[in-house]
Length: 427
Image (cartoon, rainbow, N blue to C red; front, top):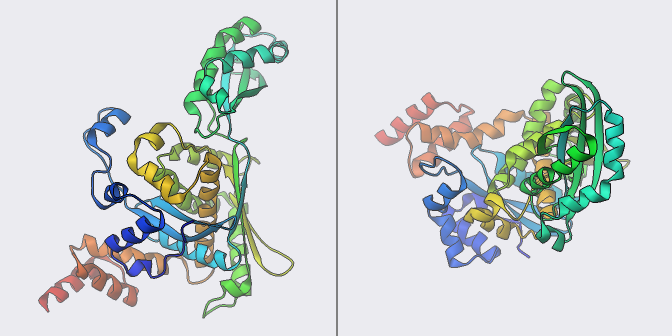
């Protein structure tokens, strides 16, 4: 098991960091080369993944450290363009580690496919007809994927939802409830939905229209919990008790106000999406499910909760849909996606989902802690200063020199970077 602590990692060069991760994750020379050189995704392979390919697009690929999940150390690959995300997640994981790290759990890998039926005048009668023939419907659905059945998955049940009065008349919607094992499952459940449609039409006398998965994967949930004592949270300027209260105040704002909740949840996805991207999963599906889940009460609200236990410790939790897979799609075809899974050391899709929500919870804590203390811009702009130095034309050692000076001045602007660069080069 790799040690997820990465001491002094920020001070190392990218090559030195890669050496450390390669040793920690037991990467082969070929795998290490994939990360050290551009072009990890060959153009021919990219051309087979999507249409109209003319090239590939690279993102920074970092590793968040310090994560301990269910007592196990985890190195977390993250592909993202925004500064401060990897640093914030790593620092919050370091604080959490002092209190035992993250606890996670998840439900089974259950996805839904929807079959829309129109043209019925007896929608409730159609519902009972479908339920009566449940076993026959399951049999047809499961006849299309023997591999999944062999792995212990398959269509487990059906649900029938009736909308008796829509602008298009009565509508009956049948859900196939499918255990997709370690796949994300979209292709599997879509194929099943299409395969049962003739039988559904025969049983109901209606016409089947849409046959498609739902991205509200409310039966496929991942959860994480973290507990931090005031002693762990304290800073030189503020007591831990003050920070606990500030985090809870900030969370409560998101819980009651959708304008704040949108930004609050975006911060959570700042942690989750880079993990999803790095592993070749469908981050749009995860985003869609997350935001639909956030308004399941009829009010758009926070994906996390923060509260204080009887001992005065801060307790954070998250529970949300996590439709991710280890097999199929870009997860199998993109070489770096496979490498990400190896670095992370996950063996099942459920484990991957649990790591992702733990990172989301850490990222949320980082944002709320900053907002409750010095404000979000101080730390973020200090890290963003490197980007501004690059924009100004700095290269090599100039980047760090200019970034550090702007951060020290609390004045991170392109025109300031240009002036500093000119002064540096005059010397």
